[in-house]
Image (cartoon, rainbow, N blue to C red; front, top):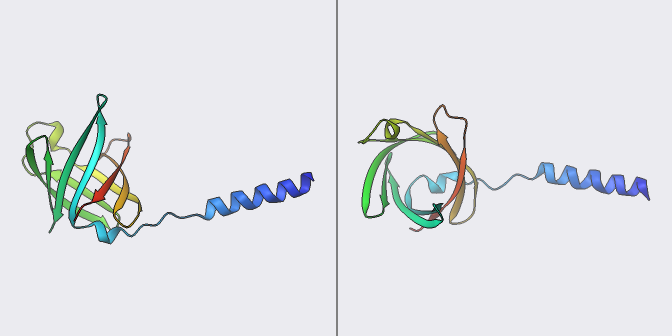
Length: 125
């Protein structure tokens, strides 16, 4: 009985460790997207359009434009074109971790910072 349990547990661990999430990143290089985040207990939505190396973000009635430089099919760097302060001058590294038909889960951080956050964006068009 113990021996069978060991083999079962080993098989499950082997199966789970081989699982690779789907990453069809190229379908998310351009398009219209939305991203909802929790800020101070309130859900806030950002919409953005990414095309030809440019990303335009719309948040709370304001727009902002950034350059987008793809490192590979699933990673890119975003840098604001017209930063308003020193914090906005820093580039953000984005990494797509998994995809579905119309969403992608990503991890992001300020370039050089070890603290990473995660989110999910939905392709709206």
